[in-house]
Image (cartoon, rainbow, N blue to C red; front, side, top):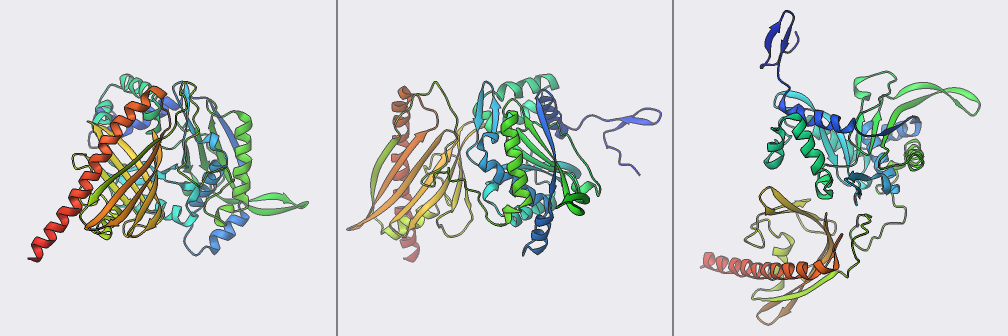
Length: 447
C-alpha cells in the first residue's frame, strides 16, 4: 500500500493534495539555483579491475563509493583550481579538500537524502571514508540538525523572496564559503544493477555521479575481454572551470581510479604544498595591499609549577571558556591526550546568530614546557606557541603568536592589532586565574 502524507487532503477523484514539506524547500531552492548555471558534463568509463582486486583484499571494508571519494579528493588536491566557488564577481578557492556526499538516511520518520561532508578527504584512507559513510547512513534517526536562527527565518519566506535572499547572500565570500564543499559525489550504483548514466543538476563546481560496476566487453592488447567497468559522469560549473582544465582534471582522476592509487598512500602531494605552516587559500584580491603579519609576544607570571599550566593548556576550554566572558564552542579531535596532529575546532560567538570559526592543529608538544600549533580560519592564518619558563615560586607563561590576515588593507592593521592585544592579555589573565583557583580549591578540599 502506498504511503500517504498525514497532511494530504482529498481534492478530487483518485488523488489527494498535500503541502510541499518544509525540509524539501532547501532542495528545491538549490535546484532552482543550479538551473541558472552553465554546466559541462564528461561521461567516462573507468576500468576498475585493479581497484576491485584491492577492495577485495583490503583488511577493512572499503565500499566503491568510499574508493571513488578518496580518488576524487586526491585529484582535486592536484588541481586546486577546481576546488573553488563563484561568490559574486570573485572566485573563492578553498584551502582544504572537503567533499560532500549524498546518502539516504532516516530523519524524523522519513527517508531523505542528506549531504555528509568528508573533511580532508585527500588525506583520509579509503577504509575510513567508507566507515564514515556507513555510520552516516545507518546512524540514529534525527541526526540532521534543524535549521536555526537566520536560516530558519529565511526558510519561512515565500519561495521567490527566499531564493532571492539566498542568491544575494551568496555573493558574500564568507557566506558562500559556509555553503559547504565545492566538490560532491553521488552514487546511483546502489539502486541499479545495470549500466546507467546520469546528468545531474547540482549547485556544485564539480560533481561526480557514479553508476553501477558491471562487466563489459573491452579491447585489451588486440583481444576482446570482459572487464569490470564503472560509468561515471563528471559535471563542471563552466563559470568557474574552463574546458581544458576540466579535461586535465578528468584524466588525472581516471589515472588515479584505474591505478587504485588511493590504496597506496593517504595524501597526494605534488610538492607544491608548504608543510611549514597552515594552508592559505590562493585567492587573489587586487584591492588588498600586502602587509606584514602581526606579531605578539606577551607573558604572565603564574604561581604554579609548569606541569599545572601545561595540563590546562593541553585541554583548554574543556572545563570553562577562555576568555571567561566569551561564548565558545570547543571540540577536541580526537579526544584524549594532546599530541602532534590533535585538532581543536573552535567557534566564538561575535554577535547574535554570528560565529567566528577557527581550526587549530598541534605541531609541537614538549611537556611541560612548550605547546605550539598552527591555526586558520576564513579570515586569518597564523602560528601560536606557548612556552612555560620555570621560575622561583611558579613559572612564566609566554604567549608568542603570529597572525596573518588573508585579506587586510594596510590601514586596517593598527585597528586589528589594537583589538587583538587586549583580548590576548585577558586570555592570559584568565589562564592564570583558573590555574591558581584550581590550586586553592584542591588545597581546600585536602584540608
